[in-house]
Image 1 (cartoon, rainbow, N blue to C red):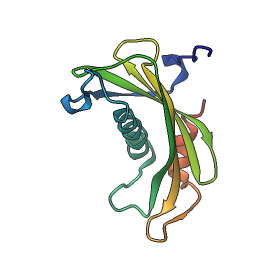
Image 2 (cartoon, helix red, strand yellow):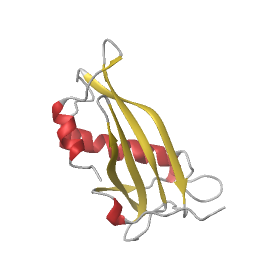
Image 3 (cartoon, rainbow, N blue to C red):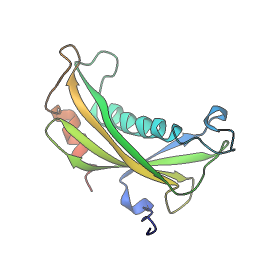
Length: 144
């Protein structure tokens, strides 16, 4: 089995600091694998809210996660400040696939990296819709 390619900071467009929490650690003394998906969700949605104007409370259009995956390279622990790097790997008509990596503060290579797919849906009809222009413009800025 070949060693996986570990991405570096230059592979991502935007970074968000995240502080690990006491409850993130598992019995083995490091952040549990499922918590990384929360970090992915936090980074993607923060970008959509701040840069694309996504209204998560009252907006007509919302993003549903339909697929995600993660590869782990080095453990992180509480208390640590980490950074989530974000980019867009694929932009479709109604969906986007993000590339997201988790870096220890100041580290050049990712402790973990993966993907996260949103499909944009009209909230009341629960049907996929084209990505609204304000969100599409923000996502275009993250394309690799």
